[in-house]
Amino acid sequence: MNANRKRMAWIAVVVAVLALVPAVAGSFTVSLLNDIGIGALVALGLVLLTGVGGATSFGQAAFVGIAAYATAWLTTTQGLSPWIGLLFALLLTGLSALAIGMLTLRLGGHFLPLSTIAWGLSIAMLFGNVDALGRHTGLSNIPALQIAGWSLADPRSMYYLIWVVVGLACLFSHNLLQSRPGRAIRGLRGGATLLASVGADAYRVRLTLFVTAALFAGLAGWLYAHMNRFVSPSPFDVRASIEYLLMAVAGGLGQLAGALVGAALVLVLKNGLQDVLPMLTQRAGQLEAVAFATLFILLLHFARGGLMGLLRRWTRRRAGTQGASRHEAPAVDPLPHRQLPQRGTQVLSVNGAVKRFGGLVAVNDVSFEVNAGEIVGLIGPNGAGKSTMFNLLTCTLPMTSGQVRFLDHDIAGMPQRQVARLGLARTFQHVKLRPHMSLLDNVALGAHSRTRSGILKAGLRLDRTEENQILQEAQRQLDRIGLGDRVHELAGSLPLGTQRILEIARALAADPVLLVLDEPAAGLRRKEKMALGDLLRKLREEGVTILIVEHDMDFVMKLVDRLVVMNFGSKLVEGVPSAVRADERVQAAYLGSVV
Ligand code: ADP
Ligand code: MG
Image 1 (cartoon, protein in one colour):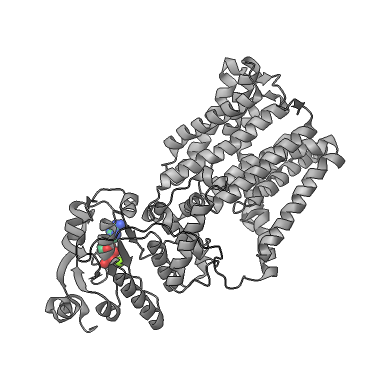
Image 2 (spheres, rainbow, N blue to C red):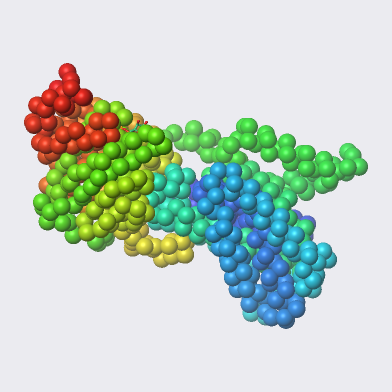
């Protein structure tokens, strides 16, 4: 709470200063601040896209350009109002982003940033080669904006519009990050498998994020066109894109305020250099590029988190770490629950599952069933194929051959997220949590498929009822695993064993029919193992079905109703724990002296 109040105070100071500037500053400063505002708007989109979502774009200036040219063309050649220009600009930017995103966002690794350079270059080139857009001379005589008859031709009045828009965009982004779609965006860096396991489609999340960031750039382009009253191709080329990216990085990709700080830093520095460098040399333009490159490299070396990152490290050191905390909010209706199948009916059946990795047969013709309300253990020596079997039945990996039925659906070949939506929730042997998100947010991510709010609703804060339901559910699940008093801590600060338990809470937040756990007790101490056993038994009582891979024989034997033993990819034996324990084949293959 205290930290929150401090932040509000800071924001109030910044707003007050920004509001007073035009009264005291000269027109040069006001124009510079206008440019900073417009830059910040683009950088804000990049903080979301690159900083939070992990997709680097070297083509953002192209979206600024599309919007600027769209409104310029509509208002100068068609004589329409700039407000219609705004709609047209955003529509065109959004559609372009959608088309480009659909073509490129599936590319992995370095290919995505490379492709952004490609379309950044080609769009800028387009502006310079279309007659209707004035080729290299561009379009001039763009009308100034008018609000209720009041002209914004003067930079001082434009200033207020720009900064109100920047303020609203910051608010929108802030709301977005603390919401259902925001958590999915923050989850993107955890990989497509993580998102699919909670029923989200990483590609769609990334695409909507990409369009959102482009719309921020589009808004900036519209403001730019009506502020400068003139557009030409060069401010929208790849060099400009790199400058926007530099703003986001310099300010700090991890935080929204980084966009403002970074835009200010880059533009003030650029202006300063433009004044100073010509005094030193004739070739000022080239030296400016060198100076920027040096700045960029220094930043990457000494302050990956940008200026805001440095500031944050400093304030955190002074403030110390936060104490224990719960999510406090008025109680709301719980999220609706799934109807669980009748105890004893078949929930999952695997039939002749085969998985080959090249020449290696990791799973070889395995069949078994799991019925509602039972705990089934899948055991076997290391490399027996248990995790692969899990990946097959959760559709994380495609099967070579065989069938899997879950409830009334043939799920083999279904996308993993769809299977998750049917009520199959899983944890991972190698934990997939977002270390920089709180425990509460990590668990809330699990409720993704039970809820609906999208980016627009979240950004406008129209999602509050549902959001409260989600957080209440997350708090409930955290209470269940005994971490209910530490919900605001970061997941990465937990020991590995506890992180596994946190994954169970995330899986439970999905209200699953079948819970699939891959080595949940690994890394836990004795007492923690007992608590985990109690939790799983309680879940069974509530009617949840559980399939568990575990190494700790003692733990498994006491817990499960039935065991399936795998060895070298094949099913060796199946039966109740006592029978499996007594089976000679099992002892020979695996248990040996352990039992
Ligand atoms: P377990 O979980 O029982 O220890 P795994 O399912 O992880 O076993 O692995 C079974 C076998 O499949 C091992 O020999 C492993 O090396 C191999 N394997 C697992 N995943 C892959 C993969 N993605 N590519 C190639 N081989 C794999
Ligand atoms: Mg394994």
